[in-house]
Length: 358
Image (cartoon, one colour):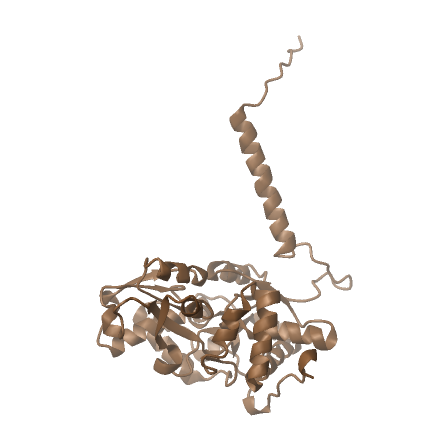
């Protein structure tokens, strides 16, 4: 005998749950299409994507990435790569580990630690020199490193060079990491935390440090260029297979990044122009931030002298071991390939001028 079916209406709770799940799926698909380009057009000749992706964050340490993309589009109508913006280090790192971005700007100690863990990553160029600061609230009584004893300091990540910067400064002041409370915080959240006095000091890549100055509540304790000259925070890294299988593409990438650095540092006009188009088209920030960082003072962050040098990484490695974030099992030759730019003096800036300045 056939059992009679009786319709059971969904409860309100089930309805809300289904709607929530549906909204989550829709948002995920929208994010995949608009931000991650999951359904991007493929090359019919080989089924691969037409351009490789490169990850970056909206910080001055990664400025040469959008500058290279923008200038190439202006000069040739096309770009070398597809820049993908992330808002934090965890997402950027996972995108690289999943092979979504075969190239990325990344924290130097993080790249070194990944190599120690067996990840096939190679640093091929630097992202910048200097370009960080330690900021305190203008009303605080903190004027030197010793005044931070017992205070809370925010850094971007366990593997950030800002963490090593603080560690290095503590050593120079005769203090240890036990004398402060170190907290990890996404750089975009740091200005608000300092304003609310939830932390006593912050340190990250610009322009978030400058934001506290411009808004009138932050004060520079010191710029990294004054305490750790030629400081390195971020580097350009690629998957090792890219070098093995498509070295000309990597060479073209490094050439573009190095030319952009020379172009930025060629004149203050170039710096101010970059502040405008990068803020508008890539960073989604008020141009006043980059304008301030790239000019006050002009050497607050630099984009030349970016070849890979072993002594720089030796110091990072030594500090990383002392701070407990590196174990020293990977050598300079393991995590770098310095062959793409051997003579920085031979690098010429892009021969491009904005239409308004021609």
